[in-house]
Image (cartoon, rainbow, N blue to C red; front, side, top):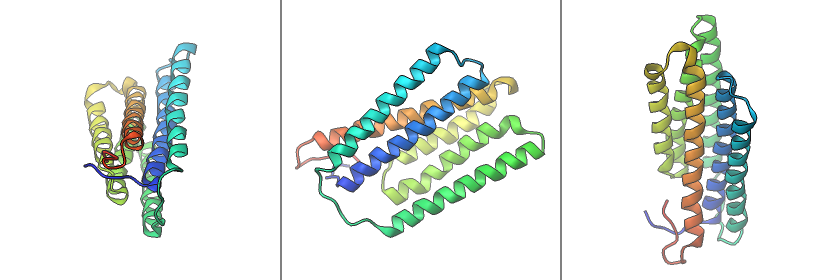
Length: 191
């Protein structure tokens, strides 16, 4: 869809990309740790990726200041809060229950699925279809990880894939938003 984006929308995309960047880095580090790959080269690559994506997000936040703002929607903020409260509660319940039942090898895949599922209501709340793609990729990856990896490799491999999906989503979001702020005013953006 082609439309003009407001400062709120561009800023929101930048903040979303920062969240995906930060959480993606955490997932990547978790995966590297689980696979015992915490060495200089992977850590340096992770740091470079983190800095590059965060730099793009901060660039967008600066550019958003020049765009027209619209009043904030308090219902959107409330919905965002509740969606995240439910997500974190589900993560806590799953982590506790899986440990209690001795199936904690599956907890990373389950959390990846929960994170993916929480993207669907966020896509609707923020009117950003890209979140449907991210959510689908995460849920699909969570399911695939159960089939692709033996138990002793599942947690590290799933975490690495989850981090890469989040970073790819951040990159696409940033690219689309940068394109939107650089486009002429008559055709300003791809949502």
